[in-house]
Figure (cartoon, rainbow, N blue to C red):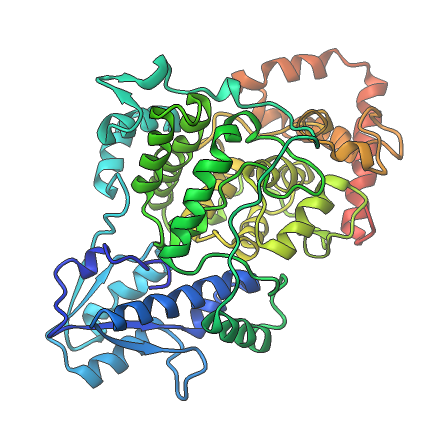
Length: 505
């Protein structure tokens, strides 16, 4: 499948060049399951075509369907039926799909296809489904930090015997520095499209013209060779500073010291452990400090693994959870970028152009605003799934439903990631060039995040007041003068009425 582009997939472990056929297909139903960003479609289709060509050159028989082939099958099931009819195989072997929707479809093949179907585990992950369930069983709270420690012990990454390297498991407290524009920030490694990619770009521009985002310029890696070069570049040029500034945001600086490797890992061009081992090696050789290396590795063998476990544990209705009962529709400026809030405009504009924004822009700008505004989390989930090049439902949904929107009521996160404009001002320079004043509270030109923050806490007080991590905020709210509270609520109401009317905010 399009996110299984690795020679080490479990489905290929015992494959034989002389007898077996590798089946790969570009499918309309997958490209349009949501209206994916043009760059995401280009990335996946081009990477698939390159992978298929590499397999052919290595002597494999590959049955490959392009999206625009005559009579091309639209779905996985239709494609599998065609292949079974053509090849009459003894068995159809596949690594389990990464998304619940697709796994259900594949599981139906055992009845629908007149051939033995073997679904193998995806062993690119450090923890199997069974291992995660075993870890989760009986726990009152499923916190990532404790799962992460188990993964460190299992893999041996950043371990000194049975102790964590450097003495601490987590160096997050050292990784919250704001960045300044005078820092040297290397861009991620970029690659010029070859003929295969150019053909895909043309196809996407023709067939998916109404999808969100810009198709060009396209500069992502679409082969393992180039993905490894991107990894080398990050380890050498950016990793040493990644930790300090991983939460920072700067106008015009879209990548800072972030790796931009997540999509390569998610589609199989890079192996998660090899990426972690490269970072660990940089620490061992003194080329990167422990806070940078630990913070980076935690995102992969900690957060990424944990998120996958939570996704499969969550059930079919996970994405429909709505703890706050929010019903507001997603604002139109999440597509257009046409807003006077500099932080939102910056994040949405670069998302449209690059199909990328780093984790703090996603969590504490775009995600924060819609949670404070009471937007339906299902709408938010679908937006994130559409717009980012690394967004596959297994990794995107828990990050949005659980972490960003707190729509699961705290199963994943210990508190909502709620904040006022002060947080954005502390971690970015966005507020310096904004029509709204972050220092003002309830005036017409006050930062919308300020009033929306207190309004969010007030309208959800019954559900959140008992949360120990929000106790201080509710004590502050309780001490406010009645007139101050009314001013915050009135300002928030005016903002929300503008959103509902489709007016510029």
